[in-house]
Image (cartoon, rainbow, N blue to C red):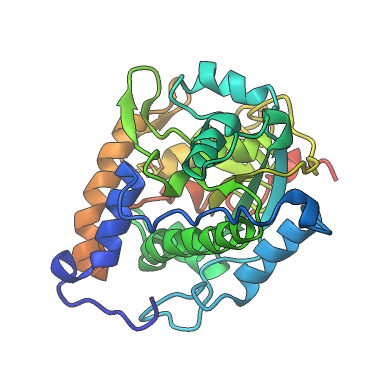
Length: 335
Ligand code: SF4
Ligand code: SF4
């Protein structure tokens, strides 16, 4: 991304357009890498374990050349050191997601079945699957810029939405390619043709694989009233996740209370995110109005194009300049 400054972004930001359509309709992704069926589990000694995934994701974020902003912020990273968590493929929470989010939300087994059938092998049991989830915190400079914004996202934030999403897909694709090449079935649901965002009567705009819900399942954070996931590194981040045919052990305790890290829901004075929203899409009474938020975010496409030459939409005002921006708010920290 580093050397692409677009004078006519509506015409020239092909990568941005492809990314936006891909995010909505599951299109333009590179083909899924094929499973190397000559190698099997038995030949993999040692198998990748929890430490391998934590180290691999952390190293990619620390050293990958694509974790970099473009003009005029050359040499700045997009993301800081990640958090990585695991959840078992047969965790009952995935059935609960069917009730809470909708029947359209994949269980790890359902999406892995698709991958297995594409590769001519039998689908693994749900108990032989794990989901790897990771949180990529947005940098201090980007958060500071967005905290100063009052109507539209800052340029660093808009770049992070676009280049950061492409980066996230890149590193996941590298991990998927590596493991599939070593005979281990793995799939990142959000970069397959199965990923198709739609409006649903119960939950509004939703995708069949929610990184946020998966991250909650992995114990990485809980939801704020503005619907962002509040993690120990805050709620200003991008999330990623993938399903792998390995038995990995959960490394974090998932709070029962899905709002454990939000001051408002814990009876403390806050609602600063409510004041940050330029279109009143968050209220104490009705929490986050997804439709009002969607309308505002969709309009930001024009703003980002005109001002930053980026074909991207975004906002994140309610995730910056708030007590949960960069960590669990102090009054709720247990350590
Ligand atoms: S700003 Fe306050 S009320 Fe809003 S999500 Fe964060 S902690 Fe909760
Ligand atoms: S992301 Fe949505 S809810 Fe948050 S400030 Fe922007 S429009 Fe409001």
